[in-house]
Amino acid sequence: MSVMRRRALTQFPMVLLTLVSIIQALALELVWGKISAGEAYLWEWNVDALVAWGTISVTLLGILQVWILYATLVIGFTWLPTLRDTVLPFILGIQEFTMISLIGPEFNALWLYALSALFLFGIYVAHMSFRRARLEPDNAAFFTGREPATWKDFIWAFTNIGLLIVFGMAYTALRGPVWLALFSIVFANMSLAIQIVSSRRLWRVIVGIDG
Image 1 (cartoon, one colour):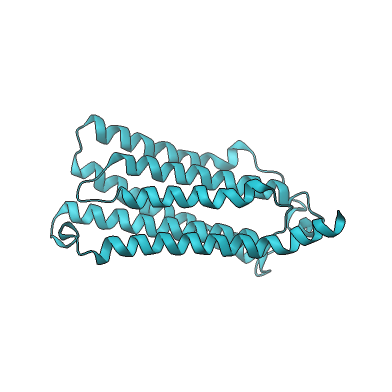
Image 2 (cartoon, helix red, strand yellow; image 1 turned 90 degrees about the horizontal axis):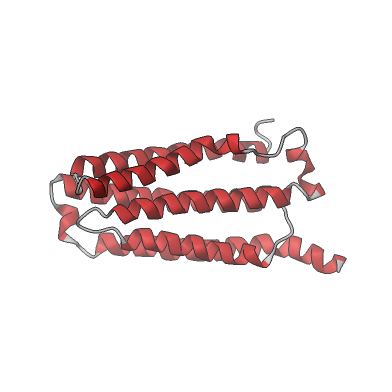
């Protein structure tokens, strides 16, 4: 059993990263398909086109953030995988595909709900992975002196998720004002950009640039 355990710890990161890269490539292909299809609404000089490009930008940032999440986990940590770890990337992929399918000439509030679901599920994946990584002696150098995450550590993330849901509900209740769609898109782009920049800190710790 110890041999099989070591094999799982050693080979799982390569399998996981390969799976994630395939799913992300498919998501990028779907996004490119939206752009290269030559949809007329994307090339009109109006606010609706700006909103559409904004949703594409958020989707691309979301795909990038999912890749950064898994690349950081796999390169920085080892943990004993479960069958659930092999299924979670497919769920994230379905969420990404759903977001892409909701991009169209008219802004759809469901797109905001899909984005908030992607945020929430990403938090779940990261938290569960870190919990199991803490149990492995190989990761002691990182976790020593660091307390386990609490609900307070997720206030910023849950606030973003809550705001996205509120924006979606308000957009529906107000019968789709364009200004609210544009504001929601700007907020989503900024939130993901901040998240990606924040990921640099963890990466720098992992590779030993920062203590």
